[in-house]
Image (cartoon, rainbow, N blue to C red; front, side, top):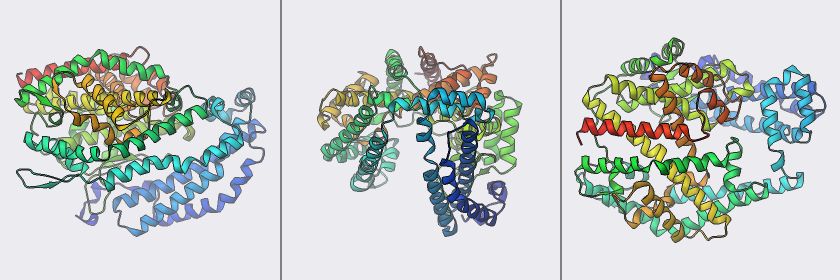
Amino acid sequence: MKRSEINDKYKWNLADIYASDQEWEKDFAKLQSELPAIKELKEGFADSAQNLARALNRIDVLSLQCERLYVYAKMRRDEDNANSLYQAMTDRAMSLYVAVSGETSFAAPALLKQSEQTLQQYIAQENALAPYAFMIRDVMRQKQHVLSENEEKLLSLSGDFASGIRDIFTMLDNVDLKFGTVDTPEGPIQLTHAKFIELMQHRNRDVRQNAFETYYSAFKGMINTIAATYSTSVKKDVYYARVRNYDSALAKALFSDNVPSSLYDGLINCIHEHLDIMYDYIDTRRRILGLNDIAMYDVYVPLVKDTGKKYSYEEAMDIVFEALAPMGNDYIALLKRAYKENWIDVYENEGKTSGAYSWGAYGTHPYVLLNHRSDLDSVYTIAHELGHALHSYYSDENQPFSLASYTIFVAEVASTVNEVLLTQHLLKHGDDDLKKYVLNHYLDQFRTTVLRQTMFAEFERLSHTMCESGEPLTGEALSGQYAKLNKLYYGDGIKTCGTIALEWARIPHFYNAFYVYKYATGFSAAVMIATGIFEGRPGVREAYLDFLKSGGSDFPLELLKKAGVDFEGGAPIKSAMDAFRKALDEFKTVMDV
């Protein structure tokens, strides 16, 4: 379908950012003309509280202008990626953004040259520095890990080839590896990453097994090359940690969010203590599938068929409104604004960016891109993306530009809270078939987002510890360790084979070390919050809304404490595993197993 054929009520209204392309061009030209004057900000940048406040405010103004220009151009391009006008505008906006970033990059090093005492005095003297107090504190926190000017310059020169490690894996994984074909009742299928996921859900077990073995045979054939690539990536992480005086690669990775290593370790330990639930889930899956034994290629096939019910966009929004009613009238009013005021681009059209996202520029409302397919998953997508959108709305409305952006650590909390509230609503009001489907979906979220991501996190900790202690990261060593972890997390009830030991070799997230644990912590925090809201526990909703309004005004763990989520002691993880157990028991009841 062409975009022109879609009713305007299903398209977002980007005029709320720029009324026309001509207005965008005016702002672009204006910002471009201001580039030479940015150099003047360096002079006397932190010589006084007034100078510092003036310069930081000016940098914010420039950054916001860049953000608006890029967001508008990129979202116009996302409407139809074949549109050459918006391709060019996006490229121009990005180039200007890079130029502004380069001209203003002096700020952090200049702050680091000042003493903490001096900067604290500035903040106390000048009220205009209040929006920057947290940023200044965070920059000063990094001082112990910043090297001399010459050392920093030398280190920066290593960036291109250090980042190239991930590029090597990306090319190998997405271009050079060939997976062959798999015979199915529907005919032979050329195996790709996407087709592999699809075939892992095939109802025919022989097809699943064949796809599993065929897919991993490609990685087995390249295992030494992949091991050398991953080993180099780990060595890179360890090198930068040591050069910057961190205790470990893990400590360096967690530093930006101010997260202690004890939280990472505590997540893993808590999951270990609750693995009996995972073992029960695996056995339940075996019984429902009617198998004498269960293998790794049986863990993705749906246990319940899709209900087949279709949901128009309007029906889907009504369900979301009902499901999120526990969030209160103000929250629902904002959702309805998003619906009525064209914050959402609903349907697929030729050239439109696939998937879904929430995005926007500070000072205007957020937007949501969808490709609505009218199934239940699409209803979940709406709830998910509107969670992001309202998080951004509340942050922007209550924080200055310098404090509005929140980190990845908390980003998925708001979206997942909405998903969990939708799940609980459907379980309360749906028929038996819908309940079965929703519980199947919910249980798979626990398995993939909490348990599996924690297993990945443990593998990353293990591989980096091996490197730090001088152990070689060969394909055999890595596969051996991964096999042990898989056995631990899935238990004796699952039929293991040497093939699953190769799974580590296909995970691209491992080239962005110590990232995946955030999926588990974010989901756990969201389950804890959503359960409290759904059950109407006093103060939970209000505390959560306070969290949404906090933006990036503090470190993630401190922000989550506003929502009543304190990871010290592992309460959110324990709460999530309790919810996993409860959902599993309910599933076994409705499935009569």
